[in-house]
Image 1 (tube, rainbow, N blue to C red):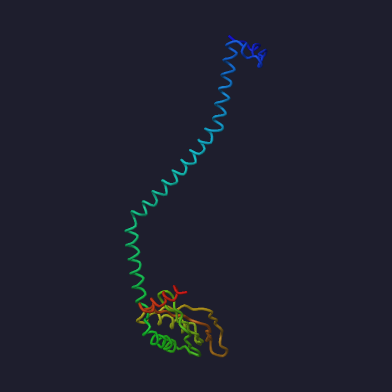
Image 2: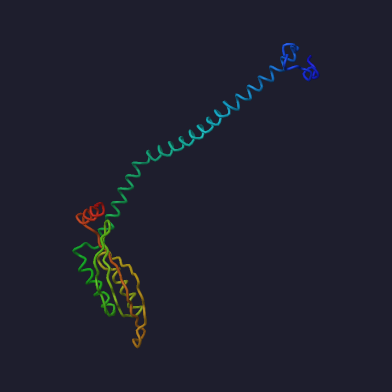
Length: 209
């Protein structure tokens, strides 16, 4: 068996004279170096590439499964969308139409008077057209008690047509010497639905240059 002293005394300039044991050790060492270099320069990069591709494969499989599930549920989603559109259309049809709007404004004004409220100002402004409905802002200045204002809102809500009122920039100030009456000053907005011709025109206007 080769001894360590033989490796220490080995002449690398004359390896041909080394014993078979020494040559075997040298060849084994060189083989290990070659394998280590090959792993470092070739196999290591390939393993990293393989791991990256495996991660991408897992991610793509997850995305495919999610898209496959969505595709399988697509008919149900489409049915739900149709049902929601039909419900929205039915709800919009409960709002006043264009021909009913003038009468509705009169009803709102008369409802305030019927509740004992004084209309110092009831001024409809220019209509604002949205995608499928229109807003009708109204400048108002009314004088009444809390009870009368509450009765006014309650009566408007019970009108034959669905009436939605939103209140913006409203201020309430006590009226001196009026026995607790308040002056309400600001704007209210009511809404109506657009018919098919108006809806088409609104969409065409939005899609235009």
